Amino acid sequence: MSEQAAADLDPQKGSEEKLELLEKGNRVKAIAENGNNKNQEGPVKFTDTLAPDPANGNGCVKTGADVGNSEVEYIESENLDDLEDVEAALKGLLSGLDSKDWVLLCETLNNVRRLSIFHKEAMINLLKDVITLSVKSLKNPRSAVCKTALMTASDLFSAYNDQLIDFLDPLLVQLLLKASQDKKFVCEAAERALAAMTTSISPSLLLPKLQPYLKNRNPRIRAKASMCFSRSVPHMGLEGIKAYGIDNLIQVAASQLSDQLPESREAARTLLLELQAVYEKSQGSTASTVSDPPELDSWEHFCQSKLSPMNAQAVLRVRNITTREGLVIGS
Image 1 (tube, helix red, strand yellow):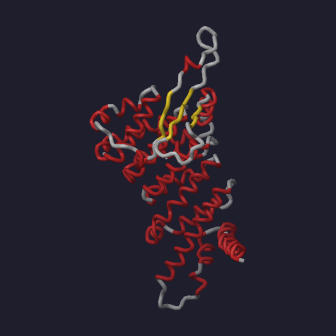
Image 2: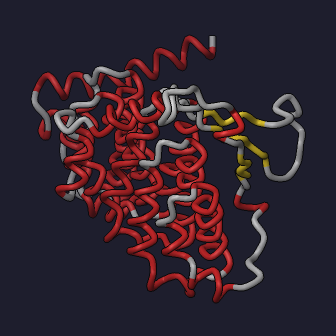
Image 3: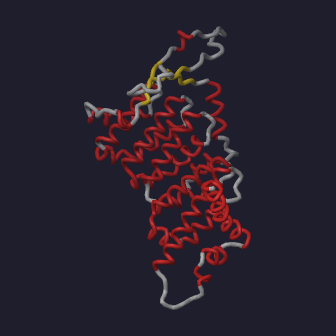
């Protein structure tokens, strides 16, 4: 984890608290038009309005006319159109991403999405700067900018896969923070970005990046990281898990079983069941002609040999609880 990433997650730094204060001070709102029409097709328009400052320079209350309204469209990836002028978009990309005009900033973020979908090779040399400025947008107090940046992150993961690994740390910090927020539509967009990350980046590269966050002091951060970790492991396949080390993975999962939040514990249980299935399959495929005692090859013996007695007991209880729950549901 980079020093900047660690600073963003350090409660002493108060990064998240500062962001929340900015959001509360500005009272950013995103109000969906035609919100009751759930079957509406195409992009959804939102009005992002900054509430007026209590007083202007003369001590007078500002009116809505002084503030103004602007519309921003949240366009799903499949509804994005190709760019008419790719060269012009590339030329104005970095300046647009660094703009203080939030409407222009959202438009440029959508251009990043279009480039990643339709012209990803054209943007490859700009990736580092694009990621840096996208992270800046994720910290923006305007909800419209933040959500558009989260949608941008999803498309970047889908387009560039492992090519993002060198720039992932600061982006991962912000995604975990946003996914841990109480603001529902920002949280959901962040979770979709994290899901895109876990399916797009190779687990062998991603898991070492996630592992430090499993011990973060913020329980919500731990929970989101644990869920990503659990979702990523199955993409390794049998041989990949064996190469990474089932013993390493079982120790990680065991440490999450006693976590404060149920999301962490459930992610750990899901991972342990996956690991048990892989272990038992690998034992069956490598069965020796020597008639060793069956108990030496059992999942129970493996857990007891790799974990402390308390952790081994907790891990073995996972299968028993799952079996009992299955019997209750099936009865």
